[in-house]
Structures are given as C-alpha cells and as structure tokens.
Image 1 (spheres, rainbow over the protein chains, first blue to last red):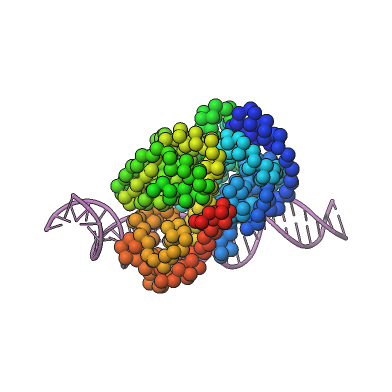
Image 2 (cartoon, rainbow over the protein chains, first blue to last red):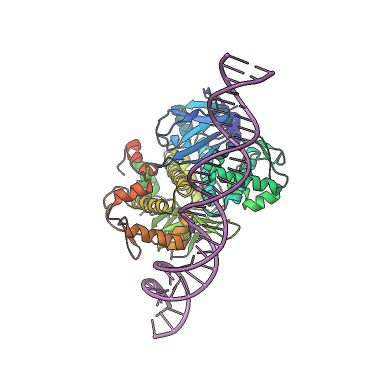
Length: 241
Length: 241
DNA sequence: CGTTTAATTGAAAGCAGTCAAACTATGTGG
DNA sequence: CCACATAGTTTGACTGCTTTCAATTAAACG
C-alpha cells in the first residue's frame, strides 16, 4: 500500500525498504470527514493510499476555495515537515484510506537518508508546480477552459502512465466543489459542463467522467501535462514511473 | 549578501558557515531582463540578493499570469533542486543582484548536511503556501480585495519584522503587471486602485505604496499573515527572524 | 525635446454571479 | 415497497462586475 508513495517519488531499493519498514497506522475516513482541520496541529506524516480528498481554505466572507486535490499516493500534509500547523483543511470526498507515520520517525529517517528527503521534496515541488498552474487556470482562463483543464489534469494524475486515457474516471465531487476548485459558482459550472457535453467534448454518467475527444478537450483547456512532472521524474531519477 | 538567504531559512552556525564558504558568482539583471527562461535548463542554484522579480507563465492564448514574486532572500528556482527544466519564466522588474552556486555543490552540501536541505525545503513550502493563498485570492475575492491583499502580502514580505509597517515600500510593477498577478486587466486595476485611494485605504507616489490605515486595508483584503510563516519560523527553529 | 511607455477616463458589451424555483437522485424509516 | 427528507442538479430571468475598445493625458527615457 505504502509502496504507491515510494513508487510515486522514485527511490533506490534500500531506501524503499527503509520506508516499508516504518511502523504505520491506517486510518479511514468517510466522505465529508476531515482528515486535517485548519489550525490544528498534528504529529503524523500522512499519505493517501486510496480515495479522494480536497484541500481548501475559507475566506473571511465565508467563501470556500479548493487549493488542491489529494489523490492516491499523494502526501496529505507536506507542510508538516517544517511547520506545525495547517494553513488549510483537507476533507475526504470519497472513502479514504490514509497511512500515517509518526513525524519523528520520518525526521530521523530523512536525517539518515537524505535521498528520502529529496524524494519528499520532489513531491512538494510538484504540488507547488500544480498550484502555479491553478493560479494560471483561475486567473487567465474562462469558465469553459478552466473546467476542461481541471478534467485534463485529473485524468493525467489519475492515469499517469496513459494506460487508460480514454477510460472514464470517477470524480467524487459535486458541481459546487468543482466550482470551489476553479473559482466559479455551482450554477455556472453546471451550464459550462452542459456546454462541453453538448459540443461533444465531454461525457458524464453520474460521477464518471470521460471525453470522446481528449485532444480537443486539451486544446480547449490549453493543457500541457509537462507541469505535472509525470514523465520527467522517470527520466531524471532513472526509475520507471 | 548570501547571509540574507541563510537568515531567511534559519540554520545553525556551522551550517551557515558551510553556506558562506560556497563559491558563488554574482549576476546582475536590468529591469525587463529574464533571469530564468521557460523551458530552459540551468545548472545553477540562484538566490535573489536584491531587487524584485516576477515568475510568470503564459497561456496558449497569449495571456500572461504572474504566479509569484521573488524578493530579496528568495530562492529563484527551487524546482531545480529536483527537476531540470523550468515551468515558468522569471523576469527582473527592478535592478536585480543574483547570487548563483553550482547545483552540484548544493547537492553535495545537502547530502552532507541534511539540515540545509530542510531549510531549503522550508523555503519551498512557504512558496507553496503563498501560491495557495494566491489561488484563494484570485478565485474567491473581488478586484478590490485582491489588490488590497496583494499590497498586504508585499508589505509583510518586504518587512517581515514589522519594523516599518507604516513606511511606504517600493513596488516596481506596472498596473498591467499587477493585473497579471491578480487576474485582472490593467484598466480595472487602475480603477480599483483609484477607488482604494479615494476611500483613504491606500496612498501612492509613483511606485511608492503606503496605507494610512493598514488595519482597514487588511480587513478589506481578508489578510492574515499566518500563511507567510514569518512568525512561525522563528518559534519553530529557535532563531530570530 | 521628441519618442515611447504607462496611467487614466468613458462608453458599451459580455461573462459570470445572484436569486429563485423546479427537478432529480439518493437515502431513510415506516 | 412506498413516503418522505435531504442533497444535488438543472433551468430561467435578471443583475453586475469586469472586460473590451478607444482615446486622452501623464510620465519615463534617451
């Protein structure tokens, strides 16, 4: 299970072994439950094994903005590596399994094996790169492109190897939550998705999303998966992704 | 000069000494010059010593979005720690002095002294935290609050110790660039800034920015400097900021 | 001092938000 | 298995914040 994380950050064999040897506890969260609460502190290093979660902040006016997704293999609370409190909340939107390790153990491990700290930092840098792309998405694209981009990003992140690019993927988000992710209202998300479907760029069955024309959808979105570093990692660190 | 960086990430004495001992080269950039070009690779680890720079991306439609500022003490290209190419460009908007160290030396140093890697990671995490706040700012605040928030953030980052909070600070950005940072057009930035000035929340003399009522401006912005980790760092790592 | 760049202002248009209501899905308990 | 409650989706009409386009003024620069 925790191998997903190891795989996600590309390590040498003995380092992987050291990680697998860590005593970890598993936690489970139902949809709607909070994995991390804003302002709370924690002493655990948490990795999402399966499920789907959103990281969000709330403005003083009560508006919510989702600032990132946590997909299987993602570290849920990287900022805990350095800072004790959370700057945002993380909430499960699907049934989530979370592997947790005491932070002291992680700190000891990374002191002995800086390579692992490197791997963790790589995750942090990818998360930062995704945040930057979100800034571009929300700041400079219209509703149609924003939502198309969101779907393209999720399709790539959920299927990094492009094994099943044309397969539908499950998106456990309400339209309100999609709006909170791309800076739109739920009403406008609804209209925009309808438009994408009408134009043959998107298909939807309940929470299953697919596209009859990914290339066109990417074009509408201005999507280029480079920023996800999915291909780069393998090349740089000599591991198969 | 490089001490600014060391100070910014809070290290022990001998680690600082190791950093200061690094052979570094200084580069200078005039306003408008690129410090980092998108898609280019680099073998140097760069820290901004003085000046002001913007990190930006360009959409397929040719729209520009600034994704972050580089202020004195900031690492210009943290993602280079793990990934060879750039996902955005960095351009000087004021006369910039940049200290550069060969990345191989940094990598060797961080392997010997994981604490330094920790410090670098802290910088990466703060940068990520700022990006998340930008997502909130652009996604869920109106023009007035967005611009107010931008000014509050810069005032805090330029004066982390609150030594001269009521002092004006120099903002070497055009209104077009401010718009590119907060996802608005230059025209609307102009009108909004005028409005803030008219309401006594802001004062402007050329590129010198100040506020007669920072608390009110913060209130309009919904600004809380917690996400900048300016106070946290000192408390956590036992150094004076 | 002329040239270029940036700031400013006005009018009109448009994308997205707001409000409200109806509809659909999902789940629960009797 | 149905009635009901709740949450989410869909649709319409209207409003408004922001953009666009265009022109003018001011500032910066060589």
